[in-house]
Length: 151
Image (cartoon, rainbow, N blue to C red; front, side, top):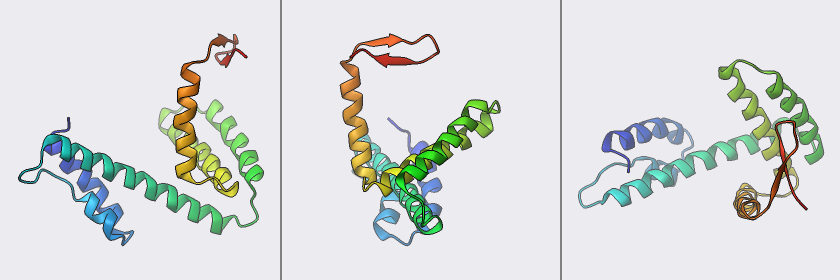
């Protein structure tokens, strides 16, 4: 369970970002905190909702950016770019820079999915489904630091 201070810190981080979106439902959800009569569970649910809205807004901004900035790109083009970004991840040794390289890969993946007609909601639902599928698979070590499921 989150403390009152942790929830206030989350709200303070989210409010300036969400204020800039001029989306009243996001703004309302971002102004979370302990209110008279609210249980800890209700407050935790509000914090979780605000975080989900925050990430949804980042994804929306990214999709809008890539669609307008790279109008000739295709789903496969975004994956080709992602291959270059993956190479950068594999070469990067600075932990601070590594997160940015992973973010580039995530951006390319989201862009490709969007250009394939796959919404973020569908992508993340499919990701949840895939996790459940993978839990029941048998896996073998490939010897190179990776694993493959046994068919």
